[in-house]
Image (cartoon, rainbow, N blue to C red; front, side, top):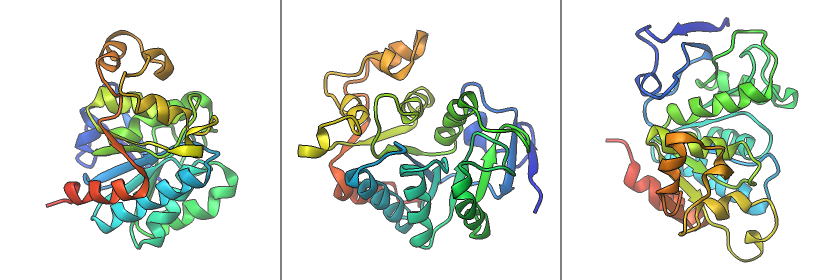
Length: 245
């Protein structure tokens, strides 16, 4: 299978992505593109049991509600989201920061193949052969949210790339759902991003690398998250309200 090149003016280019600020001019796709009814599930590369539990519940219950799952193929939460969607009998899509023919991390090569073989796809705005870079990883975050109706932050640190995805979700007008940890799970660094995003007093835009109009938008949100869920149970109820017609 060879990657397909889809320009922004092509009929197959996702309408939801075309409408975001700074849409990618070209998409490279190995496999297929996700349907409009998709949810992005993202988070830290180093999840605790809490984070893994939320990601499993988010992906599995989303599939059962008829939603596609989008994530980034990274270690940690992304991997759990893809694997859980596949285990539930659904399809999933990975938006990556390298060429679709060189998915990273290398250890997720078999998972990438399974994603495509199951009817999903790998998506990038950089051409085949492009190595991964931090810049590309941040840029791909806007594509994850842009392809989705909802963005779920399962667990993340303040330094996590998921914080960029949260910013993009707000700017793009996507529903931002964040799991709120309790008790011991609320301590330590692993969930520090969750605590900021669910703080009823709001979030400092600088923590989301937001400037200009994006900073103004974020400063006005109290909390930053549109929906705060209490672990797995809250996610299952959420999808019931978002079930496609």
